[in-house]
Image (cartoon, rainbow, N blue to C red; front, top):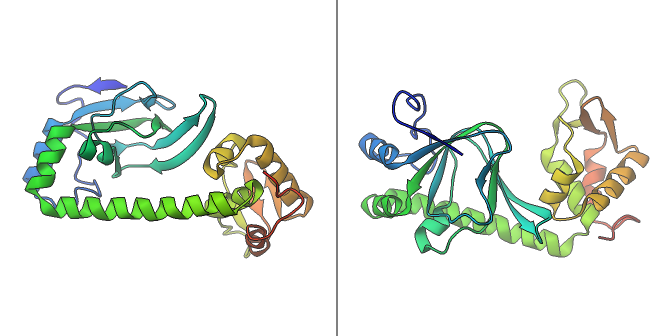
Length: 241
């Protein structure tokens, strides 16, 4: 990442849109902004790697960052994707135990890194921030519990179907159809579903053979969302991870 130095290099960005800092006095947010080190990261650039120590809270002012864990240095499991107004790294800032995942910029990003001592001090000074952080961590735990349950109860293809349903949006041109545009790469679906690209390919093949899904230009079209939803709960011939 490239450091953005002082004015006017970063004057266009601020942390007033941060969800975590919402409700704090303007002066407190400006003080936190001044304490941060600001970075620019190009698309595909590493925000955090396996060897880097996480010693602050990362506030995203612009762009998108993907959080993931690399298994055995190869296969990736996606944890989350954050955009403008989001933050990550709070857990390590609280307990000092270091990072739990890697992060890369999906597109050009501007990130403000707040040092751990500064963040801990503002937590003590502003109880409303501490409460908001507790609510965020509680939501993460609930989401993780649900994902663990899905990983344990669903086959690989069923998790692929569930991920397609999560990504799909209603087709404004045809009632009843759903669209994923642009069509995701198999490796991306595999990372979110916690499976392999071979399993994704078999699941896609099953949906297309059944005319439940089709490719249309750069998009994937789900022709029958309800039937795909049923497949997330029952086994098929491809339902072996």
